[in-house]
Each structure stands twice: as structure tokens, then as C-alpha cells.
Image (cartoon, rainbow, N blue to C red; front, side, top):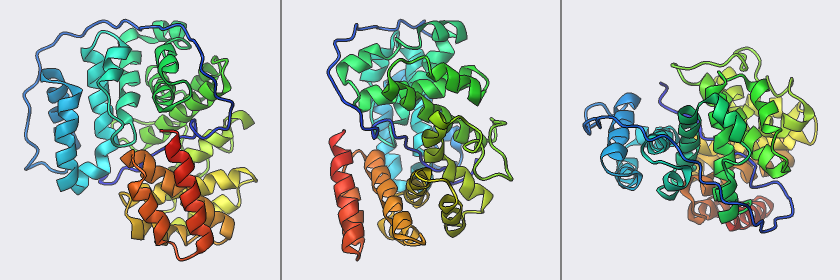
Length: 353
């Protein structure tokens, strides 16, 4: 596995829709409890760049103790290891999948959760739920699986992570058949939930393309913008919010070339493409202020730069679940316009948390 795994965020929280408290029926999805002999907790001190070692370490911690114990240990490793920081989202997916196997229902697993490293825990839980229930049961219940999250925090981060994570899980149980899973996401009657599900689907498609143990036919090594160029209009926004991570692979990490690619995307989706690049600018630098700032200033227009900044500061906030680091990025810009755009975006986005 490559040393740097890009981070992702989706825009389910950013869609401007009327938000109302919905008295939804609480659905506690009962899950079969997996019984197994817990693995021993290994030390990765001498295998610091071995993802499998970290995977087994945190899997064992959840099995023997709890997700909270795993997160406490992960935070310590995060501070001392560049590799752990770069793989953190993937690692918390593992913690979430293991929690789904351990606990009897999704509410119990979610209540053990932590938003650290872009909430990958919740995505992992939903992948685990999909794996345990099986394809038929998930298909039959998919529009109700997240009802309890919806009641607890309608259209908030908790609700978003459940539906977005379901998009990941649907890909896992449907052989990464992107177009089929997008149609499944359409089953949600609520537009916000559909968009959140689409985002998880496209994110999983990109992640699959970067995993040596996994593959997807819906990424083309010689086509930086596919499948965004092939999906229905309804799906394009969520697709372009993820696509620059693949485009950067095609262009060997050359942000300037991908800025040019985004400029060629039909408006208003070009703006979404620039915001996706901002996320990658933050993710590839492990949210380093100076590096992220330099990358966004590679944009060839005010629109490109400002939207890169928007994407970057959202990623800072999503990743750290705090606005402190994002505000440091905003203060770093010499341009009053970019600084103001960054600050207003940070304030608005952090309020959704």
C-alpha cells in the first residue's frame, strides 16, 4: 500500500436544504454477534510502515477492549508517526468494521464512535453492517438502517456519516458495481440522503482504485475524469467532489495539470472540481498550512484559488473535527479576499458539527 492515501470528504453536509426536526421512528438494526478468539495486540514499532500490522493491532484492541481504547492508542500513534497520520482514515475504517462485528446493533456500535480522521469509523461500521447482514437484508432495509441516526441528529454529521457510510457498504456487498449502487441510493426519498449515499459510493470507488487488494473497473488509468464524464447529471456533483484524487494519480501528482483539467469541466461543476483539489491539497500534505496554501495558489484564476481554499479548509475541519487548524490556514493568506473566503467557509462549515 502506498505511503500516502488521500483523504476524502463528501458534500452531504453542504447541500443547502431546509432542515427540520423529523420525528422518525427509531430503528435499532439488530446484528448477529460475531464470536471469535481475539487476536493478540501486536506492536508495530518495528513495522511502522506496514498497514497490515496497524490493522491487526487496532482490530485486536477493539475485540479485547473497545473502540474508545483503540482511538486513545491511535491518537498517540498519530502524534509520533507520519505513516499513521497518512493512513489514519483507513485505520479508523478498520476500527469501525471490527466494532460492527462486536456489537449487536448499529446504535451500540455508533455510540462507541469517534469523528477522528474524517469519521472513517462510521463508514467502517456501515461496511461491517452490510457485510454481516448480507446483501438481501441490506437491500430490504437500507432506507431504514439510518433512521435512529436521523432522529438523533437530522441532517447533521451523525446522520450524514450513517448514510454516507452505507454508500461504502453497498459498494462492498455489490462487487463495486458503481452504477448499480448509485441506482440503489436513489431509493432514498430524501434528496439529502440520496446525495450522501452517492458521495459514499464515489468515495469507495476511488479508495478501491488505490488498494492493491481491491480493484474497480470504474476508474480508468488513462482517463482522469472518468466516471464523472459518464454518470447521469444527478450524480456528477458528488463524483467531481472525489475525482481529483484519481486525476492526481493520472497526472503523477501535478496539481497544476489537474487545475487545468478542472478548468475544462463544464460550469458549475468546475467549481466542485476545484474544491476537490483543495481537499487533496490538504490531504496530501497531512493538513500542513504552508504546503496547502502554496498548492491552492497554483490555481490559474481567482475562481480556482478561492474554491481550492474552500475545499482545503473544509478538509482541515473535517479531519481534525476542530476549526483551530482551519483558522490557521485562513490567517496564512496574504490576499484579503482569500482570507475572508476561507474564514467565512470555516465558520459556516464548523457550525454543522
